[in-house]
Length: 131
Image 1: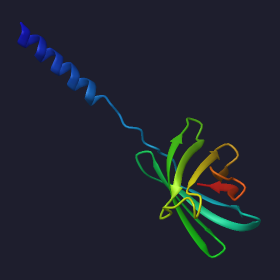
Image 2 (image 1 turned 90 degrees about the vertical axis):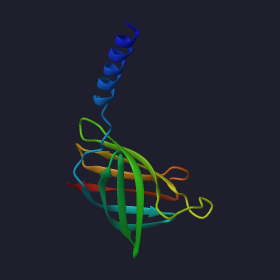
Image 3 (image 1 turned 180 degrees about the vertical axis):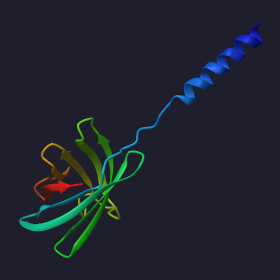
Image 4 (image 1 turned 60 degrees about the vertical axis):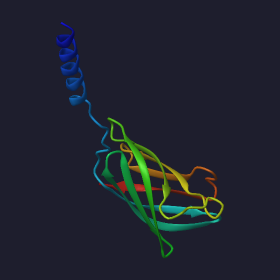
């Protein structure tokens, strides 16, 4: 009797694990244009934002002869809006440069915003995207 209970319990647990699903940030890659504000200067910029698997996304920004890349954990909402937080790739010291950023994308208006979490006045950007 005890062996039968254990056997039934093991089958129940294995079915439970098989039904688990991992979160996947699925959305069409975004190609955007807008303005980057860095300290007291403004620059025209282009960037793309694409899923990398799981909940990860990669943003690549080009402005003022610079190219920045950031890895961001992204949430996708039912209406197509995106929200995420992450950091610049290759930036290890926040004393030198702020590494943490936050993105907000509103699908209905196609507007994209990225801000520095520690000091948004030092770095932020806004623009419009297309898929």
